[in-house]
Image (tube, rainbow over the protein chains, first blue to last red):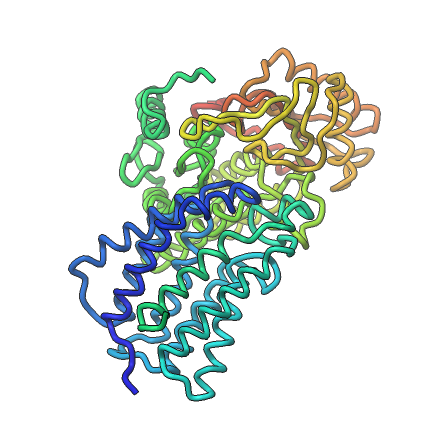
Length: 211
Length: 333
């Protein structure tokens, strides 16, 4: 089966910029409820910067992810910039030098991204953070690849698991990030970082041709 | 809300430009990436000290750049951490060849951006250590939160670690002194009013005319409880009890007592606070050997104050007293 190349990586990042812009207000509202109300603004600024940097950029998928990672780190600020930037940076290292990513490479990419988030943010699954989207996504991708799924199917499995993980943050009490200072008052709200991560992973599946 | 600003989006850059112009004998500012460093550059062979964080807390941190304290400061947007790029640039500007200490308040965004910057600086051959301050006793259970916040005690860490660096201590020793100050300092604050972030234009939270918020962080974000306004002496007691119980401070301890204003409370009230706090410490047999009163870690125009108590020993007293020359604090030089 054919792997996913630089065209897919570029399309993923551009689709992400579009979908974050589209959901900017929703993400701001989620963050106002339990954070400091700037998540949609910061991510939108960061991914718009990624989209303009991609214009004319060449190379392997890893090269494009690395460019996106450093752009996010230097433009987003707050906590989500370094977190998503680190995830993409670690993901790019995992698939360094490959022109095309097969199912196993995509699992390596998502797993390294999840591990990067966990080591940078010190959050575990269940702490009500973006890890609650990335962790089930990496696990579901691994299971799909083991069962012989195509690259597009692996990404679809990851996106579905991320969406489920984001929804499952609603009843949780936050244990990391700004929301944690609210304690019990953080329950009943979906985590904005998990929600934006689910949007990002859905964009990856759509870029691979999966609805 | 009336504010003396031009363009709300340019508040930080215009304020930094004014600060650098007013204190040109002490500091120089880079506008892109935005940071403030000592005039005359890094001191050869001395450990460099860099701190930073969201703006709106002035004079923290730029006001503490100068002899005996910081080598560089990185102001982010109002109440938002700076990104790693300016932190790396400030780290390079502060590096005199003996390594650089990052002093970081424990807020998730600050910690993550400084960690990323430290990785990048290391990749460029600069040795970086970080001390994360977390003196705020209002956050009770660090296991289930992002941990205690770094608040006014950060000023004492910056001052004493800065003095150790000026004395010629190496990077491990300066980091060790900073850790020791952080381990022996406790703070708690109160807000009487919210503040208005210039680009938001709305109060950051609601507080009724007769209410106060106890245990606020340096953005006015909630801590422990909201209660009815009581007398100054009673507020002091509500703040000081958790502080003293936490370390704990006890009879025979020697301390530095720091009453910090949040920006909108006049000195006349801060001294009423200090009077009661010193009285309580005296009743408990705790000696106040050094003191600091004023607006040093502010939250824009918020009315409120915080109390910080640092347990002293001979070495910390000597470092505290050593010559200091910054825009916001100066003595012995």
